[in-house]
Length: 63
Image: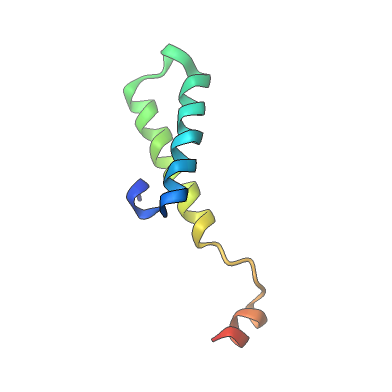
């Protein structure tokens, strides 16, 4: 999962979130930790974009 799987708006918001996380961690952030944060932010935003909170009955009526 990565940022290119997100919509344009999702990419922009995920970049802002990742930038804030990196800034919060400061210069003590290793490259490995930064990459892990990127993956986790991308996964979170992809999950949010694909989330359908409608109950199962509601989804069946739409199909």
